[in-house]
Image 1: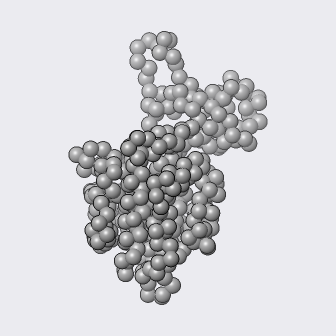
Image 2: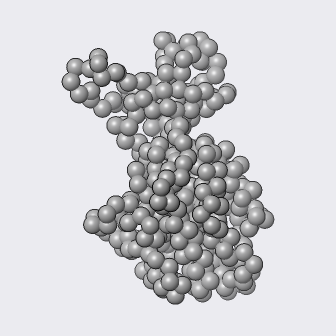
Image 3: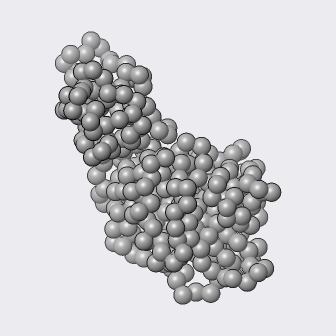
Length: 339
C-alpha cells in the first residue's frame, strides 16, 4: 500500500462515526475492507473479527487488535429553551469544547455548535466549562428537537480529514483508525504468503470506556499472543512517554507486557530494516493489551503504538509513514512467529 492509498483508506475509516457503544457506522465501513483478506469477517457484540493464516494444529495463534471506537459525547437532555446537554464518552479535554462544531446522531443527523461566550462580553478569562454547564445549540426549538433527539443519542466532533505538508494526515478518530489502517496495510502486504501462524484480526469496540470489546474479543479468540495496535504520544522524544513522528512504530516494554513478544517485534524490525522506537511504561499501558494479558489463563500481550499529535481532540495528526511502517512491522513479525 502506498501513501495515496493509505490516505484514501484513512479518510474513509476516520469519516465513519463510531463513539464507544455506538460503532455501527464504523463497523459497516470496515467490514467489507476486512473481508478482502478475511472472508469470514463478521460483527460480534460490536466487535469486527476475522481470521486467516495457517491451519496447522500446532501453529501459534496471534491476535491483531485495534479499537474501532472514538471519543465523543452522549446526549443527556434537551432543555426547555432548546439546548442540548451532554456528557463525555471517553477522555475529552474540556478546554477544547467552546465553539466546536458537532454532529448529533438522532432519528437523523443534525449539526450543532457548542456554546461559548464572545470575548467582548467576558469579564476577564472565562473558566473552563464543567460538563453540567456544557450546552449545544442546534437551531431547533425544544419541541421540534425532542422529536429528533433523545437522551442516549451520540454526538461526534466535526473535523475535516486533510493531508498536511510533510506527509502528515489530520482528522478526528485518528485514534485508533490509524491502528486499523496499519493492520489492513499488513494484511495487504501478506496477501498470498504462507504464514507459520494463525491470525485473528479484532477491531474492538468500547476501548475508550474500559477496553470492554477487548475483554470479550480476546476471550472468544483465545490466542497465544495478542498485539494491541494503538496510538501513543508524539513529541520531541525527550520525554520517555513520547515518540518522534516519522521515526516508526513504538514497541512496548513494560512489566505488564510479554518481554518475549517485545523482543520478537524488535528482532522482526531489525531483520527487515524497519525503523522503530521504544515505548517504555512502568506499569500497565492504558490500552487493550492490559485486558488481553489477564484474559482466560493469560495471553502474551504487547503494544505496537503509532505516535500522534493532539490525541483526543477533533484534529489528531499522524505521520503517514508511521502507519505504513507499523503495517510493515506487523507483517514482519507474523512471518517469523513460531510461538
